[in-house]
Structure formats: C-alpha cells, structure tokens
Length: 267
Ligand SMILES: NC(=O)c1ccc[n+]([C@@H]2O[C@H](COP(=O)([O-])OP(=O)(O)OC[C@H]3O[C@@H](n4cnc5c(N)ncnc54)[C@H](OP(=O)(O)O)[C@@H]3O)[C@@H](O)[C@H]2O)c1
Image (tube, rainbow, N blue to C red; front, side):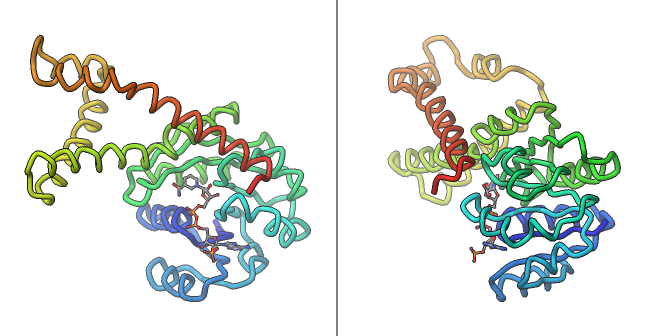
C-alpha cells in the first residue's frame, strides 16, 4: 500500500514507526512544511518527505491526516479537489467528525482514529471507526497499522471515538500528572528525586500490567492492598476527602467538551 501523510508531527511519527516495526509493506510519503522535520523522518524511517501536500497524496491508497484540528480548513482547501474516489482518508484529528471531514474534503472513504502517545513505544490505545464506503482491504490494512501501535478497538458508532479521546488520548497527561505528584510526595518525604522517579514510574507500569494480566476490576485490585486500619486505607481516605475521583471525571469530560469545540472549528 502507498501511504501519504499530511503533517509529520508527533503522532505521524508514532504511526510511521509502528508501520516500520511491524514490517508492513508500505511506501510512505510525508507532506510536512518544516524541512528539518522532513529530513529527520527520511533518515529514521525510510520515507520520502515533501513540502507540498499534493505530492504526498499523489497515488496514495491511504492518506493520513495528522495535523492539528485548527489546520483542517487550510489542508482541506489544498487537497479536496485532488482526491480520487478510490483513495481513503484516515484522520487522527481530535473532535472532527466524519460528516465534517466528508463535507470539507468532498470525499466519502473516511476512517477516524483516536490514538495516544504510548503508540510511540508500541503500547498505544487506538479507537477507530470507518465509513461504509471504505473497502475491506483498506480496513484490514488500517487495522494492521493500528495493531502495530498497541491495542486497537473498532467502534461501529463514531461517537465512541470522540469519547475515547477523553479517556485514552488525553489520559496519558492525566497519568503523568499523577506520576509527578507521587514523585513530589517522595521528595517531600526525603527520597532522592531519581529514586522517587523510579518508584513512581514502575508503580504505574506494574499496576497497569497487573490490571491487564489479572483481568480483575480495579476496585478488586485496590481492595487487595487496603488492609483494615492500614496505611493504604489512611491514604485513600485523603483522596476521597479531596474529591480525587470527581476531579478525574471532570477532567475527562472537559477534554471531551474541548474536542467537540475543536471539531466545530473553534480555535
Ligand atoms: N498528541 C496526542 O496525544 C494525540 C492523540 C490523539 C490524537 N491526536 C491528534 O493528532 C493530530 C496531530 O497531533 P500531533 O500531536 O502529532 O501534532 P504535531 O506534533 O503538532 O504535528 C502536526 C504536524 O503537522 C504539521 N503541519 C501543520 N500544518 C500543516 C499543513 N498545512 N500541511 C502539512 N503539515 C502541516 C505541523 O508543522 P508545524 O509544527 O510547522 O505546524 C506538525 O509537524 C491532532 O489533530 C491531534 O488532535 C493527538
């Protein structure tokens, strides 16, 4: 398959790296305005970098839109007249609906993906959906790309892709704030910063792997470390008093709302 990327930023690189890691048969061209960025991608991933997006689209089976949502109008103006009906556009733009993409690009074969940054190391979470016009072979190839980034869930209803933004796409930032807070707590108690960092980081990795491998609900895993009258129960009570759960829920809902705003064209 021939892949054409519009935008060669962080997420584009994560996807390209996944394609190369999985040894998928893909000829990749990247449309990216910054020459230094094109040179980096060319040397690291055997792609062709081009300054003109039209050159990235030319002959591509799958075109990956990987610019910020605020740039969609400019990109649409450049490419809408040049797409052929047998090309598929895969968008990773936060919030921008298939209907909006279809109207702006005047195009029917559309895939929407909500990836996340752990895709950079093959531990990503991608939620995706496709329009009925996308042929099976392209769906299969898109699925292979997303599998190469980590775990992928196909969602028949596109609205779930927007909701996934709030949980798994913005989620890494929420987890990193939690990680930072634990590091600061360790330092406050007197731990050397590098030790606190290792403790907090491995705690989060290990807790995630345990949740996945055990298949247990987080509440069950939490109970396993919360002995009556013990140290963890004392800490959890402070989290409950401070409204930790409600704060996390509000943060995720705000991320979803911001995605909806961006999707409607707000800056
Ligand atoms: N990062 C995440 O965790 C995440 C997760 C899920 C979805 N997304 C979505 O992924 C998309 C890309 O995010 P990102 O983090 O990869 O952003 P990014 O690193 O800023 O990448 C965007 C790239 O596109 C380039 N660009 C801008 N205008 C262009 C144009 N007209 N033609 C071609 N290239 C152009 C940018 O160049 P300049 O730097 O010169 O502007 C930049 O290199 C966003 O829509 C975001 O909503 C991101």
